[in-house]
Image (cartoon, rainbow, N blue to C red; front, side, top):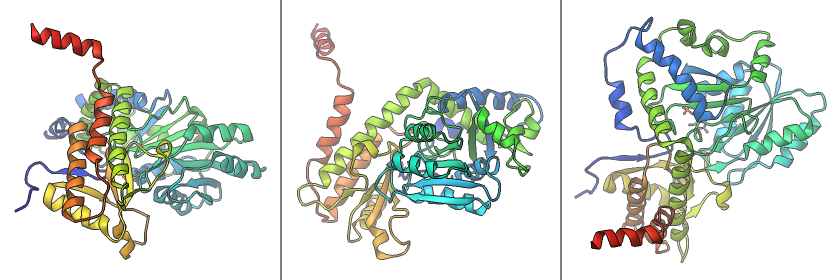
Amino acid sequence: MTLSQGRPYLAIPGPSVMPDAVLAAMHRPAPNIYEGEIVELAAGLIPDLRAVARTKGHVAIYIGNGHAAWEAALANTVAPGDSVLVPATGRFGHGWADMAQGLGADVHMLDFGKSTPLDPAAVEAALRADGGHKIKAVLVTHVDTASSVLNDVAAVRAALDSAGHPALLMADCVASMAVDRFEMDGWGVDVAVAASQKGLMVPPGLGFVFFSDKAAQVRAAMPRVSRYWDWAPRAQPEQFYQYWGGTAPTHHLYGLRVALDMLHGEGIEAVWARHETLARTVWAACEAWGQGGGTLRLNVANPAHRARAVTALCLPQGGAGQLRKWCETQAGVTLGIGLGMAEPGSPAADDFFRIGHMGHVNAHMVLGMLGAVDAGLKALGLPHGSGAMAAATEVVAQATAVPPASSAAAAAAAAR
Ligand SMILES: *Cc1c(COP(=O)(O)O)cnc(C)c1O
């Protein structure tokens, strides 16, 4: 017997769960790409994307994934031989740095390990040490999806300002866009990158680069920018044909239209609040499992430093691998592998896993997933503390508690 039959749930940190409405919007014949509906639809996406990133700046859409958006951001701003500063807090920070290296940049790493956020004072010191202003950009990973560390992007803006350094502030928001609070203009971010398949709830295939006027000026002063990555024509919706550099990603645009309608229908503040509550629900269960002789451990100790999109965990002696397998084959829920925490293929790689809780997720999905993990720990005989489900439901109940006055009124109304 297996209890896995039924609708499967992919609880990995991207691709995230895709809403049926998004998939349904994509299930249609190809449109004419030169005139009509798709041209208007594409132009209409721009203000709604800006509203998600909280910017009045520009946005370029690429056919590509997050790696493409990484490269696009750099290709427009960093010439071979330019320097970039990369405060890394996990595998994705190193990945963006590697991309810069590949483009010929001189990369200065500040490695903050795999469980703690960047230290703005150390970033400021590195900027002050660059008296000649060789550093053109600081590449910050807002949420590092491998470690589940959340970084304070606004604090890096403050570090740049207090050092009086003109470098661009660039943020990787692939995991955090439409999940964790992100205020591009409010936080003084010059370039933000995102992709379709995480908080934006669309299949992988679109990369987004948001950029400020200051970043546009840096682009204008570049010796050259490759045609495909050049963001200048792409950021002008009226130049639709040039905009995509070829055929538009038609079906992804239909899906994105519906996803943006869903996000703005809920309200971006409410979207952030939902993710915050569901993340606290996950953490409450994980903390309970880690107590009373339990060996499960949250990778990031301080809740203020944890992402609301994903939670990285350690369950030693291969427990993580066993648990992931049990959850998938016995409960129909797939948890994420550990990434960048141990050598791939080494025995220690099976000690880490991640829970994705980004995008189209709600209380019953998260509580169901946690219930499956709870049952899996028991079925596998892995030592764990008790009370995880009670702790998790308590978070949901408190966040949604009906004030006593209205529950009394409701009870009175029901009694009548
Ligand atoms: C997923 C992710 C990426 C890479 O995106 P791909 O679409 O897989 O190329 C980059 N940065 C962060 C923070 C991510 O979560």
